[in-house]
Length: 440
Ligand SMILES: [Zn+2]
Image 1: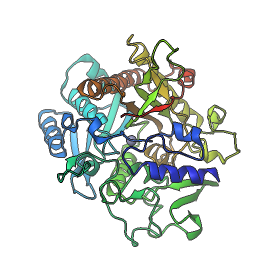
Image 2 (image 1 turned 120 degrees about the vertical axis):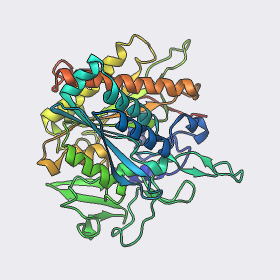
Image 3 (image 1 turned 45 degrees about the vertical axis):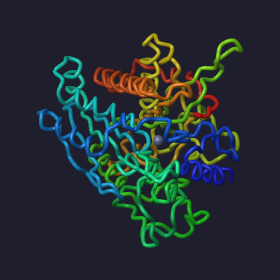
Image 4 (image 1 turned 90 degrees about the vertical axis):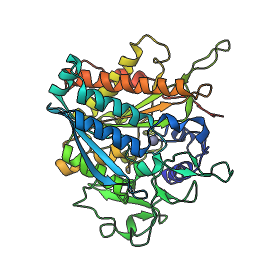
């Protein structure tokens, strides 16, 4: 089956630096895959622009001390470094937003923006912030992956370890952890083992699924993919919830029982489709967005029914029409908000052709099975670097895009939790992102 070769490619693509444009049995899928290739080189970006774990902790504790509104809690520790995973709660509204950043350790911009956001929500007395806090309640987990965020190794073989960050946490797998070592566990770069944690979630709540006891031999494919049956479907490559960080985020999500869930990522460079006409150079897209949706939107899936796959390869059947529509509208809102900035740089938003990744935060958690299946509208951001601009200016621009997206979303949700003014067509009209470009 095509899926198998696709997943293997993802497994390979996620473990090495410079894995851009990896071949796949299905090039179209590969092109649009979310959470795909990471930055081409760790030197593309100056990590000194970002806070260390210690600095992040200090900053959060400072806000907590000064603000009467914020509640800060350590919800777990990372597998390798045992650094704290923080959760911030703020707001008194009926509409609940769960927001996570930096589940991939080398994707730090979301965390920096989340920190600014927490500071505003915690300390500002503006009418805008009052309005948001009266209507929304936030549970924010900035920097889900402190191990990956701080990852050092001798990338250039000069005898010294460089701070390069990496996608995975730092955690070994042992035979007592699960029946087989799942495909998303790897030992590179840097020869240290770890999980791609956005493949480690499972749709079944912790009370229903323990990786050591609740799987069956026949669910496993190639002794590395857990193709878990669930409610009449097969959820290919489900996660096993082996990372303590993923268990902490899962508990945080279940406790929050949100209406909306947002996750922030980085991506490699890619072109805005059909841009450039021979005289003008092709434009790059600076951000891609993705909604998670269910069977009512199956006919909008770019991957169905081309080869008559099971629906679980094209949509998430555990998201109902209402939830799916809110998810798509949230994405439409961000596309609109950035287009209205009147800056062409911001008007280059593309989308992914969605299909579920059953081990991901969005697809594993948004069905919200632990809370009775009251679906959560999900959104994924990925900000991209441009090949010609990898310095501070680029970081500032990515932060600005993310901040505008977040704040405009919260304004709109505070006004109307259903987002009825936004059209699903805005989302589907946004082009799928174009060809990937090498960063160096
Ligand atoms: Zn990512």
